[in-house]
Every structure is written in structure tokens, then in C-alpha cells.
Length: 330
Image (tube, rainbow, N blue to C red; front, side, top):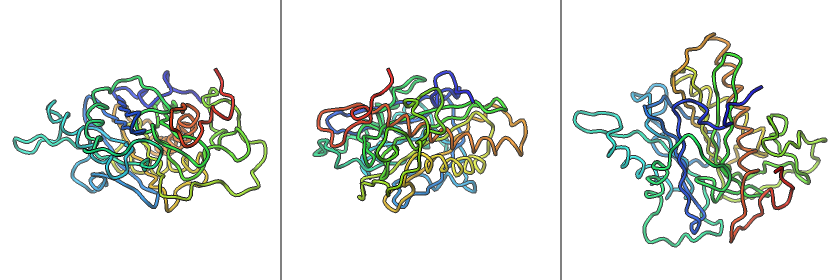
């Protein structure tokens, strides 16, 4: 298997990612956008989701394409990041046209990072401005780890973070994932340095430790609280309908389950957006969607591993990073 040139979701031509981070807040926002609207869908598996405008992503709804997707920290307060993105998009003349009005379509999802050690004593909700800044920062290159929506993210044992990964399918389509890892469970096998996603790793992208040598005998560690949720986007340049994007997002949850143990719990709002830029026709309408779903699950598992692996230590952290405990590759 081969990754795209950057091993990022922006290996899909036309997609851009922007991050905005507030170090004092220990939180931030990440957006995915493009120069033109793109097809989007969503699938939720967690028991405690926080979302905005996701109902319109069902295949039977009128609007099939969106202008941006937002992943944000801040719990319900973070939903306001989409307002900042929509304000800026509207000023740029981008959005769904209704008579003489332009209405940007910006679905969003949030994770809970309100008790991670940051200063949350704001007078005015800061996430609207973070959304605007993330859109202004959107480009084809971006960092991973403690940035954007991954800034204040944690798992049961280590800091979480922002991760991404890509892959080229046998049909020549690119599939990729972007994820903010903030799980109740763990990305790392107990009592070791191996990632649960180890069997799917490519090019030592999160340390090259490989699969755990033996199956763990103990119950997995959890945070056992409401301060969770892993939110993700899987995308492709294959020409998919909204219904097919929904199926790709659904299949990609397999990757979340491979990389986080446990996952999809009552206290996680685990959610995946599915995206298509519709740039390349399918070569085999039966076989291609099957491989696209498998590729999306593989990319999401790897992106989760990378998000945790790339996290960096910051003053006031309540949990260590993976690199604090285990030696990282140069």
C-alpha cells in the first residue's frame, strides 16, 4: 500500500485544512474546506454527540454539498466556531444561493475539552473567532498533534491530538482521513508502546512498533467520564453520491474501533463525516466503493495513531504525551 505524497487529507486535490489554537484556553478549531462546494455525509456511532447542521447531510435532504466542515473543541460552546466560518464565507460570496441571499453550509462536530487544565473563564465565547482564524489559515499543508481541534484532546493514558493519513487505492483514487482524537479509551495497548492501530501502520508513521506481540490480558483503561469524543472526516476524490459518502463514513468506523479501545461508548460522541470532491469517476461501480470503505477505515485508524503520536507537551497538561513515556523516532 502507498500513501499520498504528504500522507495528509490534503493529498486529495482541492481540499484545504486550517487550524486555530488558543494555548491559554488549551483548545482550538480545525476546518476542512475547498475552493468549490463538496459532497458530504455523516455517520454517528457514539452515544454523546454534539453537532450542528448534520441533519441536512442525510441522502434524502435537499442540500447535497457543503462549503466547509468544522471540528472543534469546546463542547457545546465550540459549535459557535461554525458561525465564524459561515460569517467569513458569506463575506467571500460563498454559500447556497437563496434569492438574493448567500447561506454558507457549514456542518460541525465538537469534542469535550473543558476540564483539561486550560483557562475557560471567558467573558465572550472565543470559538467564533477561532473558526474565522482557522478558515483564514486554510492551506494544503498543516501540522499534526497538539493543534486545532486536537489542542486539548486526551485519551485514557496520553494526550490526544490532530491526526491525518492518506492512501492510494488500486483504482488510483485517493482516500484520506482527518481526526481529532479525544477518546474515553486508549490508542495504545496497555503496558506497552504498541498502538492498537499498529497492524495498519505505513512507513513507521507512528513509531514503527508494529502490532502488539501478544493480546492484552487486562481490561482496557478508560477515563470513565463525559470529557470525550473522537470526531473525524474521511474523504476521497472518487465521484460518490451523498448516499455513497454515508456508506464510506459508516465503514470507516471500523478504523476507529481498530485504533481506540474501547470506542463508540455511551460517553463518546464518536462521529465521522464522509466527503467526496467528485473529481474522478469510479472505474468499477461495484468493487470501488468496497475498497473505498476499507481504505477509509485503514486511514482513520492510522490517523488516530498519528494524532496521539505527534502530541506535544504544554504547560499545565494533566496527562503525559506518548513521547513523554515512550521514545519517539526522530
